[in-house]
Image (cartoon, rainbow, N blue to C red; front, top):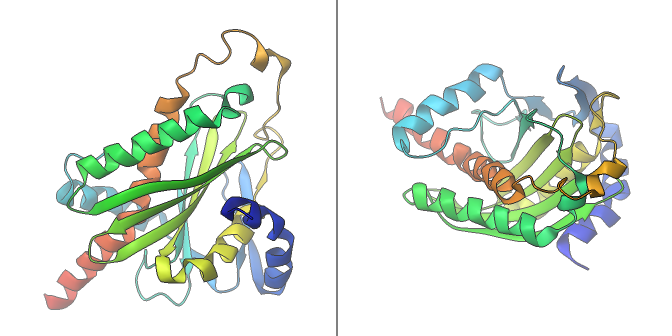
Length: 250
């Protein structure tokens, strides 16, 4: 059974196991809600914004994506300690579902994004690789896995889920060190599967999506940019680890 399919098959089980640990509903105020386990908290917006400035110093040539929300274990001593989840809300236009079913195009865009991120930030990461991809037509979600060798950390794995919406997409990335990923991946999946979209945001397939010309959007470019954001998300923990070490030495 493949990795992504296994995720979907055991979704109900992980949700049941964690049901008693759900402390509260998180309302994003951007059209979606989700449930956080009792031992997870939201990362402050200020901490998310600070990352862009730090990234500019350590990798001036890298793209600097904006992360709208983040979540991590309450017990972590510092922000962005693995494991954590980052969310990007993209309201740049509705995307036709028909093209998303062409996984070869999507995988090409994801792999281009991984290569570009690695080329621009070779001092921070290497061996960026995209694993399995799977499009769930029922929920209009694209699932993917990724692994990266992060400087000063080692191998980091991630579960990436892209939700189609009536305004664009919402990208979720769950990140953990490779040795711990099998354990934390069930938590990532449970949180992501708890996501509910507002009615005006929930994706509605249209018959016009199949018409000639509906698929002229450059999907490879769109998912390349999304993947660059996901790759950079994986190294945030490493960058903040270096920052905290410097502060302690000072």
